[in-house]
Image: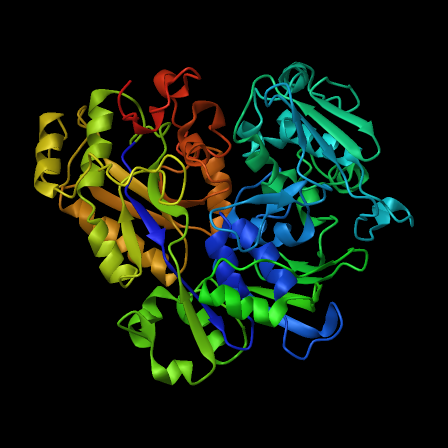
Length: 568
């Protein structure tokens, strides 16, 4: 599948808030991990007591979440909230560059044995879940058994977890347990396995089938945040797939869900059972670091008592809400960039309002995907490959950067972005903007034009490229740019719209023909991006539903990221 990839590169904050969110987003590998730091480190200079209920931060999401059970979803908006609710054994150093793992709920980094196959984690005592009726009035402490249960959930077939590939084939006995569940229809969470053992209440031992140098990064991913079995049992049995668990996230983190109006409003309040910590991150010498440290060092966390999140899909509406001080922090809308920026800096009239700007290249790709199971655009025959390649060649990435993103993006050449292991700055995509050559390619493979000027399939039947979009103005601009691109090569284009959360579900079900998507790094290795095309992930994170025996071969050599995935 041909891809053109873009990297988002702009974020902005308000002066009244210490400049921590931008720093977190730059230094921690994923916006999913950035928000945890954001929520627990915002404060004012006058703050004297932790989690002051009078202190409220108001932010906006540009698309709706998909619930907060991170075993079941992988979208960024769900992850942003979940990072503040659930805690993993390991997390990232807030200011470290490059990325550095540090203990989360673990006392220290794990003990490693048998050449990197055995990891022993020792949990901190006195960590408690936020209050919930599922605990029947008792104060529920986090234990090693909770992590055993949490990890097992990832391979429970009924969860269809997009993060399952993070541990498939890795933990001794876990895949066999999942295979048994596929046959019986029941995952036995009580069956012990050698790879996941709670040695005592606070000690967890994980045994791998083979050494895995990314495994500790995997353990810092949001889906490995501890959940309590009694909570999932209480809320997950409401339907065949346990979807209600995503509406009742109960974790041990600094915040808990106070109000949730799906696709409209999310309110978080400080978790009264959260143990807290003292802010003491070290500087890397960056000026932003120094200012942040000056503001934050020595303060007990968290400081903010309430976080209000509004879902505002239209850029113009978010921008007006920001200017009206209805929200405190947002990405700079692409459409507003020419009004706000001058030579890459904030114009004085905005800086004088107490607004500050922070720019950074994110470890993210945005791309257009084709559903390989779609009867028109999918398939692996030469003529199908030619059709997709011609579509990709008709699209001018620079037009998107200039006309839609207002110059606030860079064109990427490969699926692994800069800043991630496996990125090659010298690599160049084999797909270039060339509509003339795209037309010749379509002619060569039998996509002839009819009397109406539009091409037909080689068998003479109608050819329509169906594209799924969202309802925002920017999404409509993307659809219009695609329409103009395909008209250059004689292809009829039809766009339908839905909201982001529903599009994610449809893509997961392999029912979208063509769609614009994105991926933000979960850990600092190219494997996290390459898995987007891994065949067994179809119906989970592989929204292209792409499958290739060559690409999926576990024995593929270290240069497999450069494989042309269109060639079998």
